[in-house]
Image: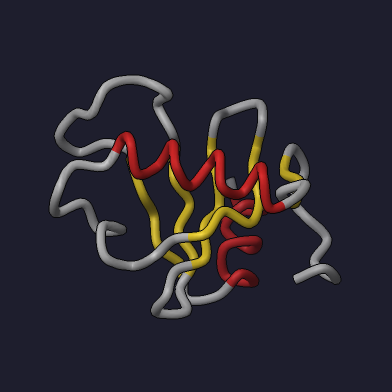
Length: 95
């Protein structure tokens, strides 16, 4: 994914330390049963302007997640799945 040109406002996760920080935050926010709960998500990109993070999952999908940086709550963090990083990037252009 190094050759991916990130959509405006998005950037690749800088390093493994940042990836761990974002993934740990996701786990702090997820309640049992969240769609990402058993999918071993790994942060790969983020939009600093909106607290959204793109995660790659263990089932080879991609999930855009809006982190709340707050307490756990039902239905949060909001998550949208994509079958590929290109499908996700195309959706960013359409917004």
